[in-house]
Each structure stands twice: as structure tokens, then as C-alpha cells.
Length: 265
Image (tube, rainbow, N blue to C red):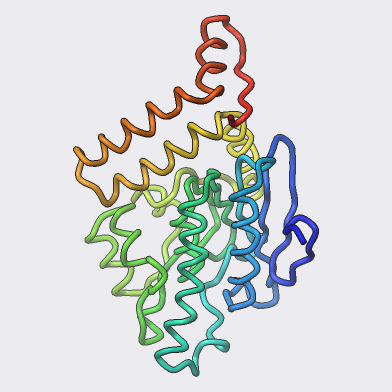
């Protein structure tokens, strides 16, 4: 059965034109706290959209109160070390399915984005946040630290000193601070978050899926490669696009002064 035909308990899946898939995290009574079922279901949907030719951009959102308020503490507090490691395996599967997804992923954030919730946001390509949102990595207050990539992506997005400040103290911070330090793309009024996310997703969905996929991969790879190796990989990806129809369509449309109609081939 396709992911399009299933009903999920912890997320709501919908589709909008043109070619936009929306994943709404849906555990409102728990402020969208992350448990194993949410991870399993979200991964299944993300993987489905990854391979779905009808989806060209993805929006991940929560509700007005929470994007996701981190791990479900009641569910994880009695884990032994191996259970904790297995839980993080599932978290990382979701995180990397966002980061490595063929499609650009837009985070639409209102309310709380804490702990694992913020780590999910940091895996997304574009992050649009409501002005009343509260962000943070408070794990240090629980006797642990961010284990879903927070110690890796925070310093890559902001700076090592700010990563240490917010991870060591566990303090919350505002959307305005998140924008100032480069953790998010834009802050908008809370009521406009989804509208702005849709606007961005529509813009991305109209681009060549092939060029988008290669650009995303090369940007992500640049975080872990020296500039010469990254540039060589970029060269291969760029050249490969000339074997597809999208490149011909894009350049011909430019010459003919019309909008390109990309097919993803």
C-alpha cells in the first residue's frame, strides 16, 4: 500500500498544487513530543515523498502550539543504554531522510521547537518561524545533551561558541535570536507561517527537480568536504544535468523569453 493511501496516527499527510507534500506532526496532547511511532510513521512518509515524482517540495509543520517539543520523556526515561541507542537510530533515520531527501524540505514552525524538535528543524533546508515561537536545546537540564545532531548542526549553522552557550545552559531563545544567529531563514507573524511556507514551497516546486536535487546534495556535502573536493563533485553534478531535458528546457525558455516548464527528466 502506498503511503498516499494510508492513515497515520501521529502525522497528517496532505498534498497541494503545485506538487507540494505536507507532513503535519500530530500529537497535540503531548505538544508533538517525539516517540517511536511518530518516528516510524514520519520516516515512512518522508521516504514515500522522496521517491514520489508528483512531489517536488515538502513542508513539515506542527500546530499553533508546537512544532515538536522534543523527545517524549515518559517514553524514554527508563531506557537502558542499548534502548537509548536504538531510539536514536530511528531519530537519525528521520533526520537524514529530511537532509538527504531528493526534495527541498521547508520547516514551518510555530510554538515550541525544543530538543529533538529543533534538531528536526535544523535538518530542513528552509526554516520559516513564527515570531512567538520558542526554541532551545534543554537536554542538559535532564542530565543528557542533544543527541539527534544538535551538537553537529548548531555550530555549522551558527557558531561554535553559540552552540556551546545554548547547549551548555539549556536556555530557550526567541525566534528573533534564531534569525539573528543564522539558525532560521525568516521570522514572520505566527498567523502567516503556513502561508509563507506554502509560498516558498510553490517557488521551489517550479524549479527543475533534477537541478534542485543536485544543488541540495552539493551544498550539504560542502559541510564535510574541503573546497577542492567539493568543487570537483559539484563539477560532476553540474555537467550531468546537461544529459537531461530540464537543462535544455531551462536554457531554451531563457532564450525565448518564457517561463520554463520543468518535467524532472
